[in-house]
Length: 121
Image 1 (spheres, rainbow, N blue to C red):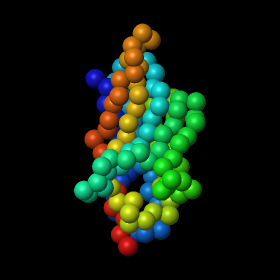
Image 2 (tube, rainbow, N blue to C red; image 1 turned 45 degrees about the vertical axis):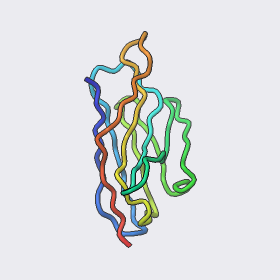
Image 3 (cartoon, rainbow, N blue to C red; image 1 turned 120 degrees about the horizontal axis):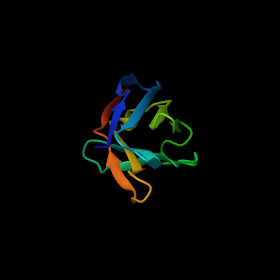
């Protein structure tokens, strides 16, 4: 069974930094696009950032210039470096990955369990 396990969430003051990690485990042939999403209380889940296997990145306008997504394909891990955090960044952050289980399979979309980031003012 393939799973994503996030870590690195916590409580930080406004202006501070946090680094989230998400590691995929299980029988995996290849991981294509990986990404981070977040869901604040009472709001819908939204895209934060994505990164392709080749390293092409995309960001929500609200985090551009403050957050940086990266990945280590040898470790099946994606990271999210979050700087200059604001109270409005408070949310549960979810990792997402498009995973091929074999050379002939289609992409399987997998989600992590989420990690809470709280930014105090």
